[in-house]
Image (cartoon, rainbow, N blue to C red; front, side, top):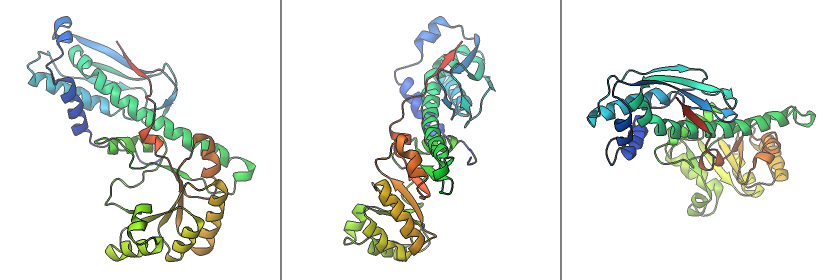
Amino acid sequence: MTQLQLPDCSALIATALDEDFAYGPDHTSIATVPAAARCSADLNAREDGTIAGLGLLEAVLNATAQRLRRLDVEIADDNCEITFHSADGQQVSAGQTLATIDANTRVVLAAERTMLNLLSHTSAIATETHRWVAAIATEATRESARSRVQAGVRDTRKTLPGMRALQKYAVRAGGGVNHRMGLGDAAMIKDNHVLAAGGSVAEALRRVRAHNPAIACEVEVDTLDQLTEVLPLQPDMVLLDNFALADVHAAVQRRQALSPDTALEASGGLTLERAGAYGTSGVDYIAVGALTHSVRVFDIGLDF
């Protein structure tokens, strides 16, 4: 698995707290919970899956305590202790305790929704990514697929504003691989770029290389003819957009004949049921936008 390093999420957490405290402090907790009260609370998985984002818990609790003090909410202390029973990237089962929090009760109650929103979302992404990775690995063990390349599962830029770094971290936690983080860390020639360059994928690639010879460049193609046109220029990677499986196999053969060092990525209309077939077709990656734009929340509860 790729080395996991949680990105700085302080701005994201601050935005979440801005929303919760936009209309004032947590009057419910102030009225019902003494300022000195402390609690022990477990974060429990309520379904099977892959965990990502546990490092957010301490950051959210600390930011919440600071916010309460700025709002003149009395809390006896803001010391929090977290005992982790799992780690990012691990598989967990329904009913399993992920972490135990010992902290001021007012802080925990104020931080609860932000913690659960973020951890449930990142764990959903990690869980979905793991499903795709596992589907390809399962197919790769079959006799007919043993000699084939086992493709990596890559994300896209179809992410929520302000959450890209965290969402892509969750993909890595699920065993996936990140595509470019933005527009400037790699070039990606898509169909509209090709049309703007006069309709030739080769000409579009030549223009990118003339502009920045050092930047890695991926070229999207819609047909085998376009692939044949661009491969002699030895692009770093070619994205096969909405290719039928038979055409993907043909593309792999053409790549081997014309530019063996060019990586291939399959994208468009892929489903989990077809992940194994595409992921062992000989391409190096499959791109799955649904990892970040369509996941169902992973169910996690906080229980005193």
